[in-house]
Length: 196
Image (cartoon, rainbow, N blue to C red):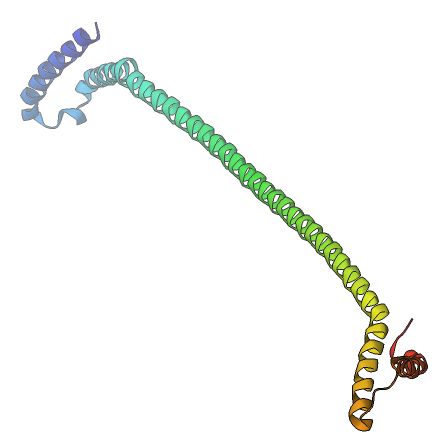
């Protein structure tokens, strides 16, 4: 229907132009008042057809394209918003994972440190016990040596004294008298050298 009107409009325009060129020899027709009614008619008809053509064919396509673009832009904005929210949630998850990893590493380090300290304390206690046992053994041996030392010293002193006297005098002396002298001297000097 619109195509038919459009072709009719073109046909009438050519017809009108033919009359205008024919009337052109008498002067400018648009200034001639007898042509004003026909000019207003054709002007109204041309712009009316142009209005109908634009409003029914061109403008709906343009507005449809604009609506399509607007909807696509809105979809892109919504998709970008979803991507932003998704990336923010992923970033938060990543931060949570890093925080958990730091806490786990700290706990592992703390547990390992406590275990090492316990092991060191246990080994120290064991070593202290062993040292105490060795010290007690050494003290017992020293006490035994202290107790047996005067007898051995007296015996050595008696033997040495008898040999010295024999060499000096040239005669044997009774060991019991030398033993009595050595015992007497050791009893006097015992408090100087031994703490009982």
